[in-house]
Length: 207
Image (cartoon, rainbow, N blue to C red):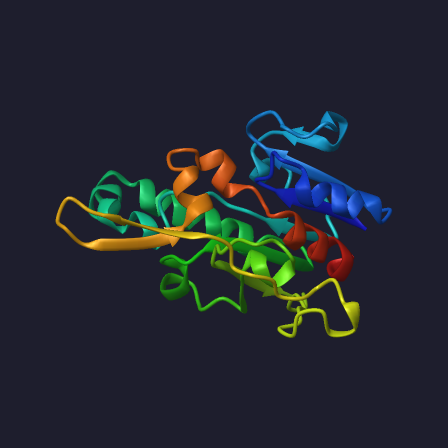
C-alpha cells in the first residue's frame, strides 16, 4: 500500500509500515526527527493529500482543540486559531482517501464533528503510561487489545498505567496526572509523539 502518515515528524508509525513492506511516508511542515529523511515529505499535507494514497493515518495539531487547553478557548475563538484547527481537522477527515484514521486527544471535535470510533491508552499496548487518545476511523477496524494481561503470552495486553503525581494549585486544589505528562510540561513535541506500542499496533493491524 501507499500510506501517508500525516503530521508526523518522529516517523514512529511510518517505520512500522515500512517494516511490513509498505510505501509509507511521513509528512510535516518541519524536518523529521527520525533517521529516514528519504521517507519524509516536508510540506503542507493538504498539498499532497490528493496524490492517490491507499491509506492515511493523521495526527493533526491539537493545540487549539484539546480540552486540556480549554482555559484559552475564548481567546482562540476570537482570533480565529480554533477555527483554523477545526478546518484543518475536517480537511483531513474528508480527504479523498479510502482508508483514514485520525488521532487526537479528548477535545471539541467530539461535539463539532462526531464522537470518536475508539478511545485508547498507551498502557493498552504495552507502554506504562496514560494518555487518553481518540481515533476517528473511515473504513478502518478498531485497534485490538486484550484487557487480560499475559493471556497466552499475547503482546497486545494491558500493563500498569505508570506513575502518577499530585500537586497543589495556587487556589489550593489538588491535581493529579501522569508523571510523564508533568515531566514533559512545556515540551509539546515530546508529548505529541506516538507511543511505541500504539505505533506497532497500527503497523501490525492496519497493514
